[in-house]
Length: 465
Image (cartoon, rainbow, N blue to C red; front, side, top):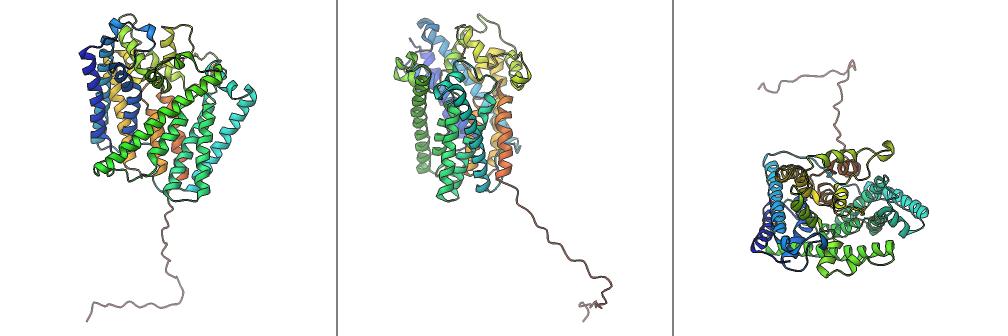
């Protein structure tokens, strides 16, 4: 890839914006704004950095020519910068407006017995679902193949939400049990439930939850207070936070790569050539699903030069995802926009190339979409962040913040947002209400004077001398 100075400067600008916004807007190591920036770093910043450093080329290789790659890279990076600036502008506007926001964060003390009960219940249901799937498809490889290749589980993915919620609740219970110095039995049970639920989700071909559980534990252990105190308490504290973030990042890369090879082996009997024969930088990108940026490069190159903008069609189709498939026999298979996008280049493929919120807004409305989508995404993040800043810093809220930041906010407002809200925000809010019940307030009742009791009372005027 023959890079130009413009591509290098644009990528430097993107990295600088990410670091500047992180330094100025993040209020703590578990701030939902930080989670968003980490997600952006994984999906929209890692790839251009690797490309500029010459460690890799755009993916897939056959879709790009050497002559055009640098110009396409520059335009795409600048588009991401516009989107990111508008997101952070939206966060600032909402925070300075003084709104209280809303989020599924618990308001008070976490009842560990109730949290453990919910963890065990969700784990039991999730495990039962997994056992039925294992029996139905004849083993782990059969279930993973049915989910990822044969699409035999289409319309049933709502069932995956049970162990997914169970994993988040269990890891929150584990962190809170550690914070309250609960018994070792309860702590161990919560830890086992977390990884058992994450393993159940992996049966559906999804690797992310195992990674998220491990990273959440790294970020959540050793809490030192939320509201910005540890973030700006001094260089020693900042280095501790940097060390935790670095540890979490390395853990994510390691686990994601191992799970990618495991899943390939379960499906094909061996690691796919596209991964096994790739260089280290490409392997890291594929294991992290970080090629969102490459898809955005294709979108920026070919829209509107070769294809018309979608003008909101993807967002309309996304609303259809709220209708269960068993209620709508003719529901389209390709609800996710990444499916049609990949089939525009590789018609025989059934899996998509997700391009994230920025790419989706561009495909539908061009540059104006980046501005509008960025502002809406920033408003959503600011709304959630405002609520988080008013809630206690405990292990349960740490797990909720990570889950909401990754699985609801993601890269911002996109066509699947309402579906994710129904699957995550509503259940987490209900669970939070249960595990952190409002304290009972006892109002003392003043006894009424005895009527016709025959007891004579005297009124004395003590003001008289």
